[in-house]
Length: 222
Image 1 (cartoon, rainbow, N blue to C red):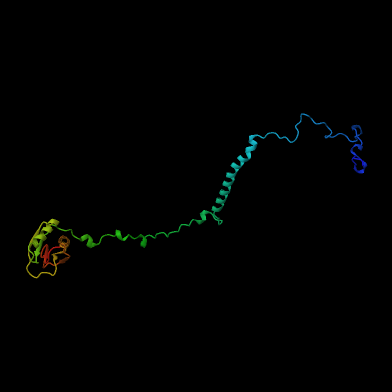
Image 2: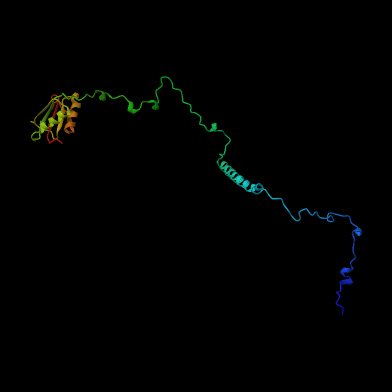
């Protein structure tokens, strides 16, 4: 057998007819033009500038805070807006109440009366006499304690009285130590005497005190 290759249909590569440019029936196109030996081949791009690479990041840094602030401000302002009822603030102001004119000669109302603390003093307060430290005060010892009348007289002199007479008591003594005075004019003086000696009983009794103030001591001084 022969070792020569057998081609399909009995046609080998050498059997294809050669076609010359003169026999090419189609006009030339861009693919028929010879390539420019100086032109770049493949995909080529111009180098990018630094601004073109960084401006997207700068835009995000500037716009993101502004957008967040706008959202927060809108939400806050939208929640604080009051709901208007259709009326102005002037409609909510209460109208002043009218007061009735005062009729001449009419009695004042309870609100126009003077307070209790500013009332004029009563007759008793204005007529209360001042204590007279020159009034004669007689101090009786009815307790049988030696020196008791002298001790009482000493206290009264220290209180400011100038006419004090200590002596012993005879007669019916009261149940408790008592200060007697002769008239209403001596009431204030008698009260000062009782306060100086620590005595609570003060009586108007002209029989026990014909004049001035009389003190009857039936127990030791407090």
